[in-house]
Amino acid sequence: MAIDLRLMRYVLAVAEEGGFQRAAKRLVMAQPPLSRQIRNLERELGVTLFERRPTVRLTEAGRVFVESARTILAESDRLAERTVLASRGEYGTIRVGYIYSAVFETLPRLVAATGRSHPGVTVYVRDAWTPELDAALLADTYDLVLSRDLPQRPEYRRETLRRERLVAVVDEGHPLVRHGRAGLRDFAGQRFCHPPRHLAPDRYHFMTTALERTGETFERWESPIHGLGHLDLGDRRSFALVAGSAVGQVPVGTATIAITDDLPALELQMVWKRDNTSATLEIFIDNARGVAHREGWNDPA
Image 1 (cartoon, rainbow, N blue to C red):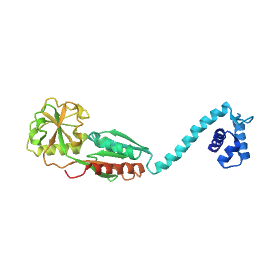
Image 2: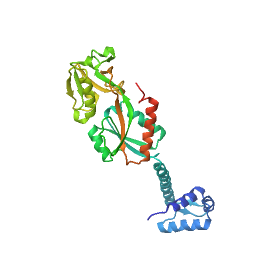
Image 3: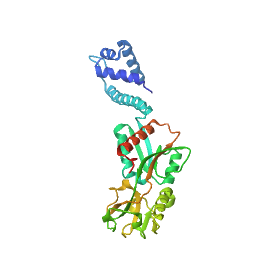
Image 4: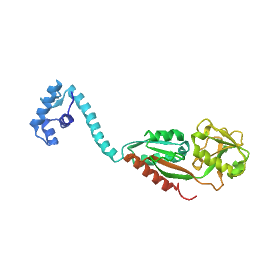
């Protein structure tokens, strides 16, 4: 049988106050109706919740009832609270898809900032290549995507979160490491390692165009496995090009070299659907804007 939450509160009040008269006063009601409603509940359950004489005390059945009632009432109160918070975006889950390079520094700071300002918001994150991120955002699998080359679509809103310069990742024994900085021309004849073109088309075009403008030739090698840790750089004549936030985050045995060429910045964008009216999404975006401002992510270099 279903038990009214009001009756649970009545039984709990009698148990905590140690009597019907004091419980009625606490509940701001007359004592006879309180006694009658608890007696009716006992009759419906077929049990005795309270011994009435010589003093009011719980039976074993009553103790079980009160223990469960406390849990149910507490959860009921939390449900009401969470519902109100969710309507303001202060409780709930936001699903964020991101490209691999966003994990170096950007995404952890966004998640941390949201956790500090809105501890009731859970950020679920998952990395993927651009085609998968695009399909998932269209299908509402994600609320927001961090990407550098998501296709332009009328369904999307987008905002630049961060602009970054290029750095090269090389084996720590690469001859250019001792200089700390180099132009792309300095890598002439070496092997450029990059993810498959179809998985990050705009980034591939950006980087290969930059290399072509040097007038030099470069070998090219597509890495079939995701992540810097799987790049084959051990020949000390291979390099990868990544966003500057990777500095200090590259795998053991590798190093970064600043690129001195005058190139456009790599833009990391927040992309979300126009019809997503989630208040939690708005909170995450506002937090991201605040982090970008504090960190100077869009300041002129």
